[in-house]
Length: 461
Ligand code: PMP
Image (cartoon, rainbow, N blue to C red; front, side, top):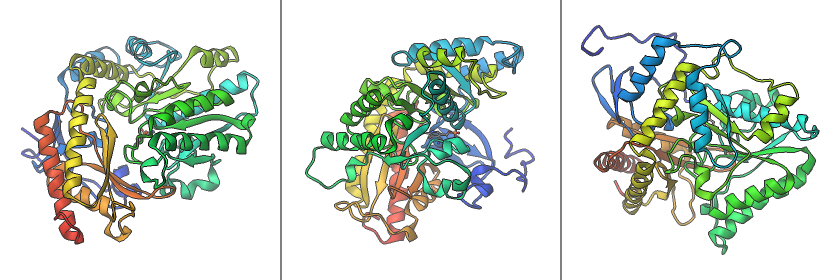
């Protein structure tokens, strides 16, 4: 018997749940969730939703996967917590070994945390401690991109180029330098995409020179953009040039693969698409795919050993390396392999991009369709030629999300301010999605876009 049939659970006024009444999205409330299975979620009123964004690009292997649930139950029956100063635990050991095996190059030391922000904090602190331990005390600046998203804790926020989120906290944090994100698709010049890619990368060299090379510790980037830029993929030349510039200046390259990692882009990590081995990589979200709070930072021994020799990493979370979370992560990896979900993400991603391109034919206010694997987005514009944005009063991205939600489709959106403005809608279903489910998803999205067009008086309705 479901909760809907039984005495329905009551919503209280006390749960300060971030997306509802405490977070920046305001006071909007959502129904209580009842259960979820595969791509579908039911609320306590019995309504069914297709999860077209895997939550916030998290539920990569779908909901209620029996293999993961069994693995977690087995671990739960043994031990749910082990404090790291007292015990090591087998799930963490095994997961670290498997992740090290999967990551490119020498990224073979893995440090577990409970989420993306914690993983980013860990990366910044490891980088800084490595600099101190190797007589590079002057290096402390972390260059970031505008816009970007790296987390909500104060350290991660200081390297987040996302105006509405960090404005009130400016006096409390040391803001870091930022260069423009590589929005080459918006440029209207005679350069080729590859030339534009190099030009955006060269902005990093310029910024390092401006800041003073000896003061710059690291550069952090999302290889495929997440919520801030809407699945932004740079021209290939950008990735190689950025890596060369970092190497040239002795600046550590940090890849934030919190959203793009764990198979979503059709490779275990997006870095593989460009053959890049960053100095530090962070993972979360799809890594434990919503079954437990889990994130990871991976770094090579050449960064970790000097820190250990100098007395150890001055950083740690009580729940870090939690055996239950790591057992979930391990089972998620097993499912990804067993069901060939990375290949599926690549194949279905190509199909999804084609379907979104067809929507672009139908709706003139879709200005761009982009992404890699199943990390895809559409951008809504007033004019496709100039890529002029829609009037903010239309609140286009939020209206489309709402109209989709009313039709039983969950998608994820942003209108990033600061550096780049544009309504984008992320379409990122779980990696188990089938062609038939893509049909269903895109059909519902088309209906929501048509309703939006009618409402806003735009063509395509
Ligand atoms: N980095 C990126 C690229 C992200 O997308 C996110 C979450 N949206 C984070 C970091 C922060 O992760 P969390 O919300 O788990 O702290």
